[in-house]
Image 1: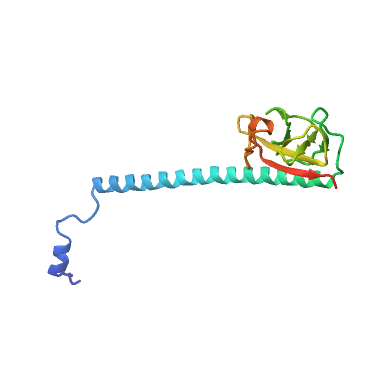
Image 2: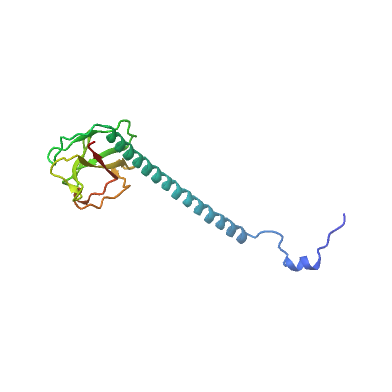
Length: 179
């Protein structure tokens, strides 16, 4: 068999007598691969958390909108004043871990009940009215249990009206008009 000789250009491009990797080069290559793998796993973890949070917020907003549409379909309850608030039924089949609450007008306390409350509303002054004149404001808060089984409020929209529930943050608000 004939032996192949490398040209002088090729010999100058690869000087030295080494014909493979040495231990140091192998360790550096393994360390670089490890750094890349750790970065990829960190990105996957962050992406997973972001997708989970987006799903949670989407479900909460969908529940709030479904509840508002359900309330719009119910008859207007005009029995309301600030002392006796009109109530509307909640939707059924709420996903496990989620709950729908409504906000009272005179405190930041969230009303826990089987029903949603409507607040008689004065549209001229943009604050709760003393009696029902055919317009009610309804505010919803959607809560979700976190991994530690604690209620976590999911904020979608923020209330900035100082007359409404002492500035409580709420997820969705709408008006129900007597027609």
